[in-house]
Length: 373
Image (spheres, rainbow, N blue to C red):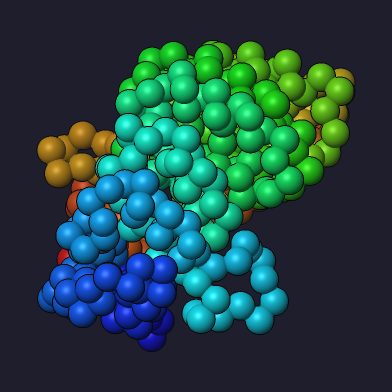
């Protein structure tokens, strides 16, 4: 059985942080910090553990932020990656998360020092959560700092620019000003779209995917523009950025990837059983016939319309195949979709449906009954 994620913050991590804070400030109350940061640790989940460590830092580091900031900076391990790095070298990894929150909470009036700290911290872990305090409090000043980091040699710093400005970053505070107007973010992403590191380009794609949730047409236009003369790496970025829009069958995005309105004649969707139970598979097959004189590029997905508690249904798109259908040819395919019990979905008994999407267009639909007994 794998170790619970929350145990990334444990007694050993807290003791290590205390040791390094004390190394750089001999008046530091190590035991007081350890006791406060470790209080009923087993009962807390990961984020609550991090917040408790931050609170302990607030209680036991100097009240003067300039002094506290210098202690934090000196306590960090050498930059990542380092061969043979160990805990004696300094603080790195998940232990940096509560340190970043400390900077975000107490460093707003000390912009330059705070930016130096977050730049240093992101090289050892990430500052994508902490930078958001400053984007909310002093957007223009913080954006100017991020712009100055666009050509930084460290990939973690460049990724901080794209990841920290995501409007809807999971686990983090939303950035409502960028949800409403993403133009300042897009200017940064434009500068990073051909970054040499896939690690950074994937973050750019995730940011655009966030933006697409509120501005789908804008992201569709960006995808069309960026696709001009795009190399393989940029094409991969654009596809990942448009994954939600592709699932939704956004017409302009489908056009960007060459998925035109399909020219099909006979379409047959068959399901093997009209009633299934939990932990069984829905088995289905699809047969399509081309009526075009040209080969067609097709993206074939399917939608499961799940029964909800109130009697309505909720659709979820699942990816299936990307194919080339030769002119005037017929293609047959089949699949099994599992209805396994999972923690992220509650299944309700009743009528469900499966809907075939071809290049974003609904083409055939069948109903079936899910039993939960």
